Image 1: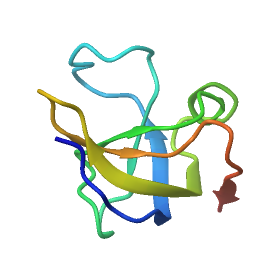
Image 2: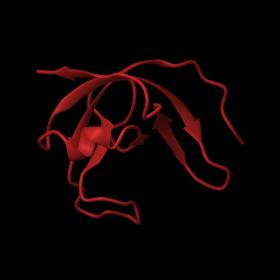
Image 3: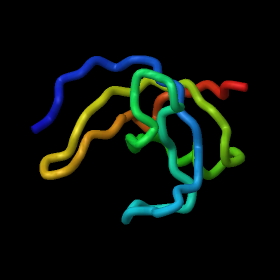
Length: 87
């Protein structure tokens, strides 16, 4: 079941999860706590965010809430889209 949500600007951050839960890579991206979305949601986006910047860096990017058939919800942002580093 695919959700039909609009894209919106979301503040996210890089982090190292305590339990990787089957996801690839050491550094992951999540929404910043206190925002519209739970910081427990995964964010699918450009690998540049997790590879090219220090852990804990915050980014503003365009994303939408979606889900995978047989899986849970996550935020999606195209790897081709620009993002902004937030200090």
